[in-house]
Image (cartoon, rainbow, N blue to C red; front, side):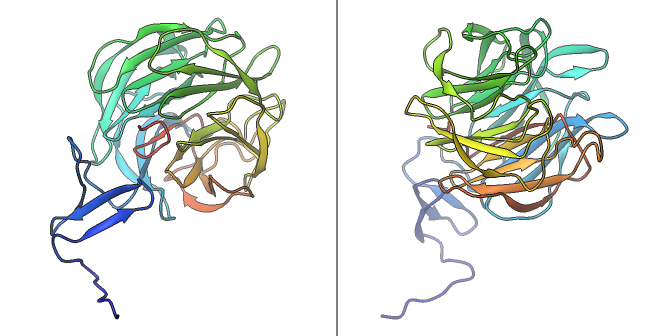
Length: 337
């Protein structure tokens, strides 16, 4: 039997989305999830956001976005409420959250949010427990978690409820204190925090159960001790790319989040760099920007891998400017249950 081909499907068409593993119906304008109490509008794929950071000339408040399921350059989304670098982000399907960060000479405690499916400037969300930066960020659909960072090499874990604006609350403590530049990822149930500094440079991986307050527990170890890499996840794997150990590296390694154990080699980035960010869809991990000390410094490089395979990253596109110390998140990462 020959099936018709449609550039634009008829209203009422049904499809199975292999990225979200959801059935969807076409309403004549957009695809919508079926049998959802709060249908998620499909915007053509999973969006990655890159927030704040440092260019060669300034700390910036820019927000850029790209569709992870394609390749290409990042486009303007809007602006953070204030310029920040070294903050971290997390997200639900609808909201992107930016927390903490620095504006020389001080760390900050602001939390901002945006609606990922639209474009525009951020809105105030609340405050973190204290001024901090260079921490890990992760989330499932309900809770966002921030862990570690500086000043004072903190091991504090704090959380927010993403759907409700307000201040962060205490969650517990990591099992290690050298968590400046720690990397974060999540499944729908587990939060992962890995690596850090300053002394020693850590290879530790901790985990928490996101729905239950408590301290971090030992998960295993990275393939090498490092910090300030880019990290993200789908529902099964967390990947960690780049970082400083004790020079810039192009290492990518991964864990299977449901199973305790050490990270395994995945491949290599297209270029060694650190203080980069990352974001994921169910199938892809994209690594964004970073720093290549001593030269060049900030870069606009973006590269990606297929999360459920192994191998080296390939070119994705470029940021709007050469930027490091950014925060990255997406509306399709693995912590969305």
